[in-house]
Amino acid sequence: MSIAGYIKEIGRGKDGARPLAADQAHDLLNQIFSGQVTDLEIGAFCLAMRIKGETVGELEGFVRAASEHSIPLADAATAFQRPVVVLPSYNGARKLPNLTALLGWALTQRGVAVLIHGPLRDKTRVTTAEIFDALGWPHVADAVGLQAAWQQGLPAFIDIATLCRPLAKLLDVRWTVGLRNPGHTVAKLLNPFAQADVPSIQVVNHTHPEYAHSLTEYLAHTRSQALLMRGTEGEPVADPRRQPRFDVFTQGSKNAELSRAPQEGVLTSLPELPATIDPEATARYISEVVSGQRPLPEAIATQVDCLVQALRA
Image (cartoon, rainbow, N blue to C red):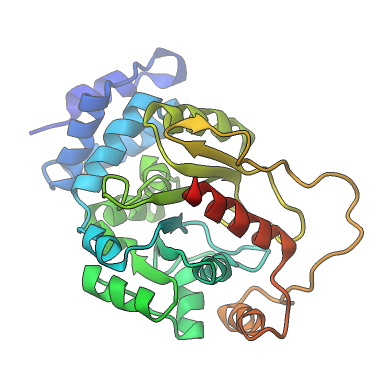
């Protein structure tokens, strides 16, 4: 088969390109994930979508395809019988310490199961996987390992190449063409428990304000349970220096009562953070918070409370 017909529609430039319907987007990505297209076609798809941008319908179809090609994890959540928070971690640390693992641990202290998914390594940034390694926290490969990690009272990390191998291969196209592609957005929207009969919520973060509008439309369209926020360098954790806006969506509707306004005004104090962003320094800092030697940054504590309240609702 070929996706040339789809490329013809989406590859007409920013103003001439036509959006795909959700079922067309699903078929396109399913063909890519099933290995039915050439590398040249994949490159053309990535560049065309980079120029055009994704519509809500296209994202719906793309995410559905990624979910169908993901390994099943719902049994772990059903057996563990606790609500789940999903933290997609795909940007890593560039200037600030990556505290996604700390957010995951803080949530477990409130009786919540936490799954973090993302890449093992990034050529330019410090990943959450590297910080898990430095902490000695569990990587999991299936539902059995996931349940075992949760029973230890810890957040769990799963490599995207394990969770959804074809999506990981699409993400890796970035290192060949030099640009990110729709796979990056799809990964940040992937919730393995969205269709499971357990309460779950995913943190959806963005780095640029314009993405907040398109993601709001997507969450409403798909009737998602989510917390939408501006991420810390693209990570799903609040900036420990200043709490961002938290918009909570329940069944796709923005819930004003559960959402939190951003911290305003002049900062009178800053939390003490690691001097460097390397995994070892970040892991030492997290360990000191875990042991009670340091306080949990207030912005992250507020995010935890927001997510827990949303799950209860």
